[in-house]
Amino acid sequence: MSATAHPLELLVRDLELRSPLSARDRSSILNLPVTTQTSEARSYVVREGDVPTQCGILVRGFAFRQKLTSDGERQIVAIILPGEALDFQHLFLRVADHSVQMMTRGEVAFVPQNDLQALMQSSPAINRAVLMKAMVEASIFREWVLNVGRRSARARIAHVLCELGVRLDRVGLARDYGYHLPMTQEELADAVGLTPVHVNRTLMALEAENLVSRTRRQISFPDWQQLRIIADFNEHYLHLKGQPTSSAGG
Amino acid sequence: MSATAHPLELLVRDLELRSPLSARDRSSILNLPVTTQTSEARSYVVREGDVPTQCGILVRGFAFRQKLTSDGERQIVAIILPGEALDFQHLFLRVADHSVQMMTRGEVAFVPQNDLQALMQSSPAINRAVLMKAMVEASIFREWVLNVGRRSARARIAHVLCELGVRLDRVGLARDYGYHLPMTQEELADAVGLTPVHVNRTLMALEAENLVSRTRRQISFPDWQQLRIIADFNEHYLHLKGQPTSSAGG
DNA sequence: CGTAGTGTTGAGTCAAGTCAATGGTTGTGG
DNA sequence: CCACAACCATTGACTTGACTCAACACTACG
Image (cartoon, rainbow over all chains, first blue to last red):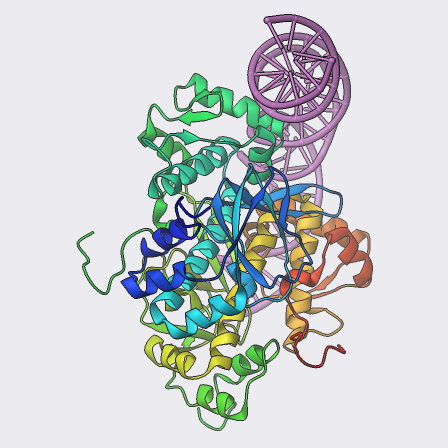
């Protein structure tokens, strides 16, 4: 358990992508007390109504945020990638307003909220990085409202595939924006507000047009530029560019 | 311009609803340097791509956040009520990922980001209150993804009407959850991801069932409990309850 | 009292949903 | 290594909720 990479290494890398951290900041994050635990696919990490006292960070595997209607229909409202926090929002909100579930088997690192909060108070850079991450997530929610509210089935699905390509590329988990997608068509349907049957037909159509190529759970994009166009994808909402203050020549 | 209420009074009230502020906190907020300006209906307060240096707070009137698809379809992703900030997110994100537009004529107070940031650094309570507000907004976005993604036209519309009823009630702008709704059916359509024609038909149906009553731009709800049910409305996502730490007795 | 923005209604169409069956993959235990 | 079981993907036939197009009515305001 100690020879492998530190469980929070990916988190640090992810935070640094938008806001620079000093060596000291990095090491104080890595020195946070963590409890790492393996979670099975489909297990819940947070349940709606919970009052968490720890902050979970996804170390390995994929997870998602979901909400249900009263008649049991599921909407996936966010996809969580390795290195991302499951619930920064609980640093400020007491009770969970949605559930977080593992999409695949994976590992989650838990840090006591108090320790993280103390660290944020002592380091403006860490404070800033964590809050930026939370604000970017809010921006992604806005884009998803647009996606689900105003785009065709084709564009919706393509848009989610593009978003994952770009986000996974950022953390080194994609190759030419293609990636291993451990998501069933039913889950994809619940992320874009469609039925699984219609997602299947739409994926088949995208494949027939040579915009998407699937083998097993691997997905790739023979014509990434064209896919972006039909997805109406513009990554501004991911706020990936470096900070303005210093070196602007990104 | 000086005998009337202070432009940030509603903001203070709103922040206090979730997180207590000391007298000193209140007065330091009210002492922030503000520039108040009147904005016409449909004018833009923030445009996608802007790099704001001031933080806008809605003093009077209604506004909304919107995003457009490349073929010009609009999605309203949030409705902003008096006392709410237009762009707390720009304290952490440099460039605007969406536009904020006035729904009605109104007044907006601008505070330099630097001053607000300094205040947040000097007062943990203000810091907490502002960030709670931002996190609650993120929670509302999640609910909207669910609303637009998984509910019927009827439920979607009813849900937005319920949300506005509860939020307006909270700031004293509703009476039995009925309120003045200065929103065209086209805007409502863009908030719920439907066409104006279909919104009209659905509203007429709700009215025929005596769940909604409209006169001019005033809307009221003869059977609020039933409306909540058909809307699948549960206000947990608004995080309205007082803080857990002290007096829990509602 | 005209004009422009809204709201309302009707008729016809279509994108996406439903229901139901079949086919393929993966994993597991014997 | 095989056979089963469970889950997932695919396809067809049919239905429907929401959209489109187009007209007309109301209201506010100068």
